[in-house]
Length: 113
Length: 111
Image (cartoon, rainbow over all chains, first blue to last red; front, side, top):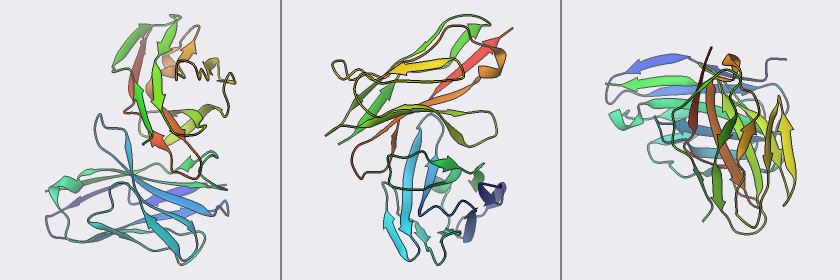
């Protein structure tokens, strides 16, 4: 059972470039989330999804886009990368509503220079 | 809004020492409380949880009690090991709201 997988593990982008962070879960969870983790700042929610075709903004959505065409996949798109987007990005999923345990992927470390 | 405040780190302890990491919260309604742990190079994983006042969550020798009167959920372990070195996050949610995390406390245990 792979759980939540994320690719790539590391990436360096130049300012203004775009990229997609991939997230896949094989647990048939309805809920999926994208967080960013800045040093000493904990995790901040970027976007979340309550099921295929349904997404909503979290605390820090600016500069990002998401889609949820299947239950398994929840890609995060960065358009026009900026240095402020340098962070570690975590994808997570949960079977039911927010009060249940979230399962996290290993993270993607992104540097924008 | 909901918020979590946890003690600043880093915390450095010798093996077999007693650990306390403080966590207090502000929330509307009746929140559920969680401790997550992040080992080096990995994502977060749930360590323990408590869903109502006076509940005690426990796992791997760690414990935390949901104290509504002091709005606290302090993490404790009687005897830490080197393998407990990690970053610990206190978190809560209330109703149909996403998890809110504290800033994390880095624990280093030395032999």
